[in-house]
Length: 253
Length: 213
Image 1 (tube, each protein chain N blue to C red):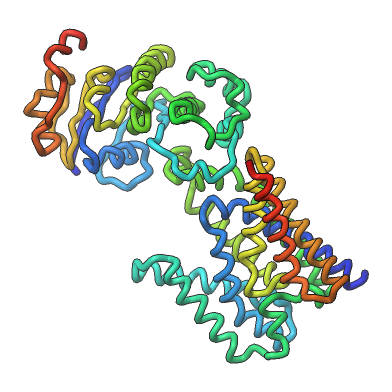
Image 2 (image 1 turned 180 degrees about the vertical axis):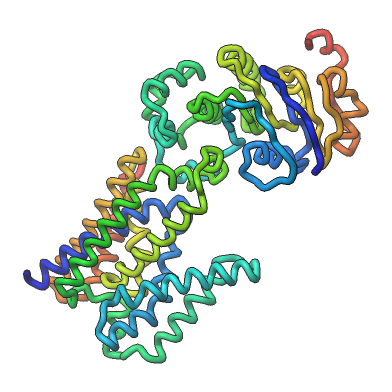
C-alpha cells in the first residue's frame, strides 16, 4: 500500500475517534485538557524518535504518568487542577528539549503521519476502533454524568468508574493523536470537530454523528492537502478543521 | 448536623430553612450520594425519585427531550405516558432541552424522576425559577400528581407559601432541627423568626388564615 493511502487511512481513524471522544469532553469543559497531556507526552515522543520505536508507545506512559502526578499533587496540595497541570506539562516540555533531536523536532511537535508503517497503522486503527466502541458504550452514562454527577449517582451509576474509563480513553487518544498532529496540537483534534458539530447539531444523535464526521473530514482533508502541497500534514489537519468551524458559525441559528 | 425524623406513606413533608441551612445536603444524604453518619431506613420496596433544583450544565449538551428520557432507558410508551401525566404534549419530544421555558423544564425534570416509577419523590426547591404567575400551576400540578401516582413527597424549600399550601408536615432546619410537625401549629411567627435567625418582615398574613387548611 502506498505511503499516502496508509497515512490517509490511519489519519481518518485517529481523527474520527478523537472527534467522537471530543464530543464528550466539550460539555465537561475538558477540551483543553488534551493539550497539556499532549505536551507532557513530549519526552516519551522524543525517546521513541531517538530509539526508533512507536511514538504512541512512547507517549502513552508519559500521559498516564502526567495524569497520576496531577492527581497526586491535587490530593496533597488542594491547589486548582489547571495550575497543577501547568506545572506538570511545562516540566514535560522542558525535559523533552534536553534530549529531543533537533532535526526531529517538527515530527515531535506537529506530528508526522507520513512516516507511519503498516504494522503501526494496523495497531493504531485497532485501538481507534476500541476507543470508538468504548465511547459509544459509555456515551449515555457519561452524558448524564456531564449533566449532573448527582443525578447520575441518584440513578446508581458508578461515577468514579466511568470517569476512570473516560480518562484512560483520553490518554489513549492523546497517545494516538501525537502521531498525527504532534505534542503541540492534540487539543485541537478533540476540540475542533466537537465545537463545529455543536454549532450545527439539533440533538445528541446529530451531535455525535457530526463530531465523528468532522474529525474524519478534517483529517482526510489535511492529509490529502499534504500529499498535494508537501506542507506538514498535522498543521493542515488543524487548519482544515478550523475552516470547517468558521463555516459552521455562519449556519449556527 | 444532628437530626432524626420519620416520613409516613402518602405524606408530603416540607423541609424548610434559609439558604445554606443544609436542606439540599439532607436530600442528598437521603439519596445516598453524599457521605453521612447514622442510618437512613426506607420501607422495603421503596423506590426514590430525585428532582434536582437546577441542572446548569444541561444546556452544554444538545439534547432533545426524547433523548433526555432515553438516557435513563425510558421506553417510548413510558415516555408518552409520562408526558401525559406531566401535562405536556408529544410535540415537545423533538425540542431541545436548552430551548424550554423554566416551567416546562421543571416538568420534564419531574417526569424524568417519575420514569423509574418511584413511590417517594425528593424534590429540591419546587418553586425555584418559577415566576409568581406560574406558582399556582406548580401547586395544582403537584397536588394532582400526588393523588394520581400515590406518591410520598419530600420537598426542600426556603419559601413559606408552598409549605402552607402543600405540606402535611414541616421540618424546620437551620444547621439543626428547629421544629417538626403540622405547618399551622409549628410555624408560629416566633418559630419562623427563630428559624431565619433574624426577625422576618412578612409571614403568613392573618386575614389569609381562613383560606388555608
